[in-house]
Length: 511
Image (cartoon, rainbow, N blue to C red; front, side):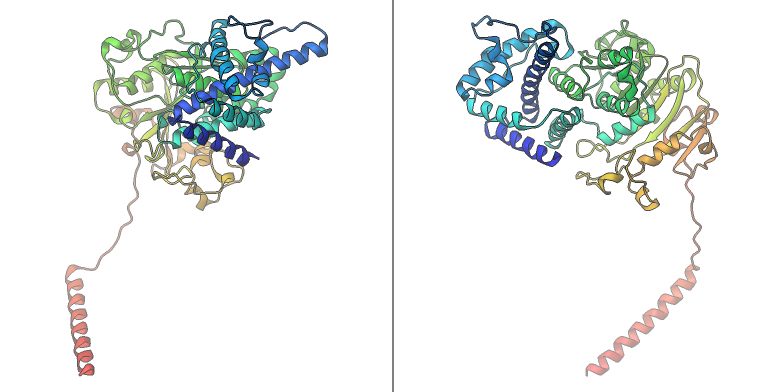
């Protein structure tokens, strides 16, 4: 079933390509618009059916009665109506009536309505529009899981096209970070560099799976749909794509907003979030003038990776926790800003773990070495020991191809089938998860030659707050005994004599 749907998506993608829309992000954006238009009609139809069944007026009418400002019946703007029009008529309706209607929805204030304020149809080929509408209409997207799978597959196509791959953290790494933090229905989760909202989507799926009862509680259900998920980005295209990703995964009105997280002051939501999950962009630096002053007070630096860490501490409420990806340089950088920030994490808050990832995790887009930092904001310290884990395999090859090394049921952090010791060598993620929950018990006794071990705060302080795993890991060397050089030379001479004699005998036989 899923394979059939993926084949249909491939056909839609090829249709755009053939129709002259070749930028993968532009294709994704146009499909997002069309899916949103389709969803509006579905929501309106649900309201109509509810009204008809109860015999009451419609509570929420998306498409008004009557005609729009260009004298077109609003009824014609519905997907179920215009999908039957001939191509040129469909193009006229969608381009001149539906998209202006979408832009007007932004004034109503819903998260995805706001992101449609500058929506435009990005091509003028009527045949292409008709073809894509017909194809999208055939994809069965009635249930949430299918909608989510469809969108995830399209996001993967953006990444595999080699463009905008920076927006895609591998899903199994996201899953690991969500499982490590165990989101709760009462959490307020934020990703200040949300991109396609992969972390927020996975957190939502975790809650659906682990806390299905939350949907029977009116307060928790409302919080899930309107107050639990917050994402910021300064790319309007990614905001639309990310919001639609959330909506198709069943979150009705997530707070996905435009914000340059490092440039704007954070007074309004400082201390507002109980959980931060993020993989922020960490290439480059900013001018002091363009950086938020409240972040500069925490750490004087231009480096984005350090500013984002300061931002996370600023946004977290006391007791809030974070799982964030950082480049290795953050762990051992020698500048004053690097050291000050690491000292702040260890001394003023509670640094829980440093999970070193293999350098090929983000290939083919980047070969940079990274780690997951796990910490809790306390403001009064609390670091006792820090847990280190050296991830050497994540279930995929660490080259540009990133080929799966195990069957699907043995991949990810929570595989359906337990792994053997040999399979663990190819996928360490389930082991990371199981050992994480033992970090205050059995893990305390691990030697530093093990794959994971704990380091007391005093040792980290002595090492100048260096957080690189290799600073503390001990390597066991096996002693190897070799023969004395004189004996080896004598053996070589004997061997040389034997070879000479053998060659002489062979030459005699030939004559």
